[in-house]
Image (cartoon, rainbow, N blue to C red; front, side):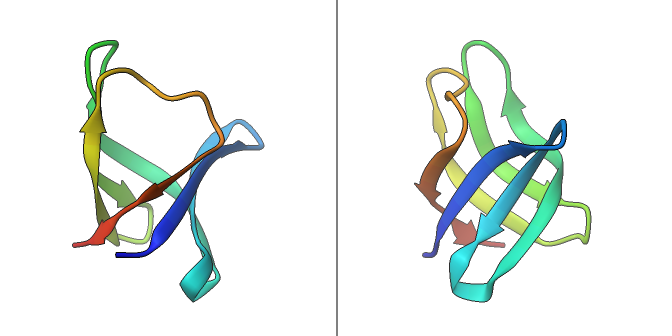
Length: 69
């Protein structure tokens, strides 16, 4: 499970994986409401990561553990 950093970059939300030196724009987040944030995150290149849902949207930037797929 790699650590990923989620941040706003030029007005878009991006996910950065240091282990792969990969950064891409987030296309969708499974849970993106005031009550729940996270779940399956899909990048614009089709890659998917899973982050355990949080109780509220986090203050960005944030570093979290993610599962691939």
